[in-house]
Amino acid sequence: ITEGFEGQARLLRLATAALNDLMLQTSHSPWKQGKTAFYLSLPDPRRIYTGLGLIPDEEERKEKEEEARELAAESLDDVWAHSLLTNAARLSGWPGDPDLRFIATSGSTGVAQAVQKAMEDMENGIIDVAVVGGVDSLLDEETLVWLENTLRLKTPDMPVGLQPGEAGAFFTLEKFQQVSKVKTKILAKIQGVHMGLETRTLFSGEPPLGQGLTALMEKAISGDVRNNGQIPWIVTDQNGETYRAMEWGHAVVRLIKDWPLLGETVLWYPAMNFGDTGAAFGAVATCMVLQAFDRGYWIGNSAIVVLSSPTATRSIYILNK
Image (cartoon, rainbow, N blue to C red; front, side):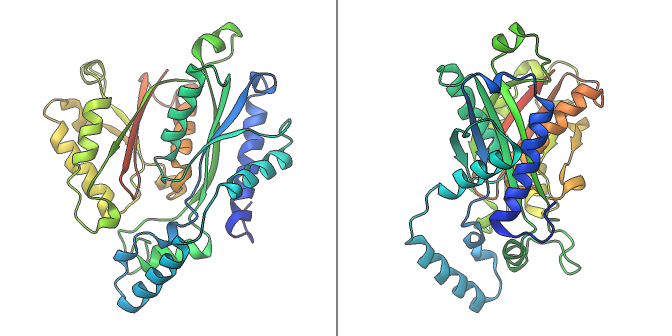
């Protein structure tokens, strides 16, 4: 569906297809009548000017740094994001004008931030239904050049890089009490969203120690989850990059003493199927878990979604049957 499209047009194709699918699968949802708003994770329009310190060619690095400085002086608003959603809604037949209440541009942790904001708004009675989603493509030309220049793209000369992918994914989020009244099928319940920070980021050029991710997991994973005797099921945004693998490995070493079953973890890597889907990853991972619960792919009753962006943000949320 994206062949021949670049930039915003490519994202629009992905968003429209995903929104079409959401509307087909949630025709029972009260989003047609209640107060509904969108909470989106989208790529940072300036991301091709991040991580420039990883470019080994000095001349090329200086050229990109100069471009980044010039761009930094320009104001950047959210008009493009509103336009993307408005056009996707129009093309998919969404009733009325969509209300976009939140945009995250932090990468793979963006969907977790969107869920967190949507939960806050529901608790405060601002909305009845949240449509949470992520849309991103790492396959457009500018992004591929950026990934290759920063030595992140998997190529014959770089066997441990990432394989780029693209995706659009949406899901609806509602209060449990509200859904149970209308007897809507509940695919999963979200057990909070936990956010953390990592000082040694991918773009810092320093080897990760996993301290930020360890602290976040210790905070997010309660004793009940650690001691329930079930082998953990973790869906992670590991994408083939050495940095991600080292960060996860350090975190496991730090945590396994108090959580022995972590050594037997069942790990799902959506990037093996779809490539790295960037800002859409959290929505892709969530939809995979929902389908696994619904179709019986997983015999347990919970899934842990672990997200690490190339920048400092880290997030974890748990989905229960």
